[in-house]
Length: 298
Ligand SMILES: C[S@@+](CC[C@H](N)C(=O)[O-])C[C@H]1O[C@@H](n2cnc3c(N)ncnc32)[C@H](O)[C@@H]1O
Image (cartoon, rainbow, N blue to C red; front, side, top):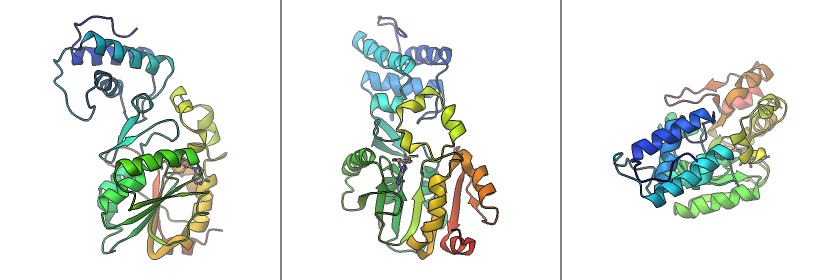
């Protein structure tokens, strides 16, 4: 029990008590939050029936029913190590709310910043750009792209039928059924068009990291994480094939996280452009179609 059954808790006190319990139990963060306080706030507000997206009055007291509801969530977070996004069924990405459950990875990609920064100008001057979100999971990147470029046509693909089911619910939630098309298949298999932007947060965790991941990750689909010994199984195929699916001015933007070092070692002749992020995250490269063709990766 994290919260005792009494009505003396203000929101502030309940969050502090929950965060202390999280610290004591050494939880892992990074699935949509970055600290014990952030994670505790999300769960307490959700448990109270308040929106975690709106700052509350921290001196507000919890009713006994709210204390009980919050305590159930906090105990599941600690005992079962279920990330908050799966306990609440929701997560924010690029400033938009998304449905989140165990059918797909919890969105947390720094690509949100790239999208929010107007794609760093790479789509400037292109009218009605076609965008492909490869390995879309629950659809967050594709949908965020459609918000950021209201004239874009977005395709979003994944190999997992479960993930695409969740993506379809998110597309519906955002009223984007006419702008975001979901496609099922492995990488470029279901793709028959060319794009101005191919954007992807694919599985890229290497075997060593898979073996040492905190328990929170075990709730996520393994096929959203693992990518062979060096984490590059899918990225290699993307580098080989992406140019065929890019317009002449097109670019490929891919998150590879900690596998960036292995990537540079595997392709010493490719000049990867590594993006920098103000809000955290690393290991995202950009390559133009021209650079992909020049590298002649096979
Ligand atoms: C790291 S998750 C990212 C999901 C989403 N892009 C996000 O950022 O939240 C990678 C996704 O790649 C999908 N995937 C794995 N292998 C694939 C393949 N061969 N072709 C297409 N998608 C694949 C997984 O099902 C998973 O949804």
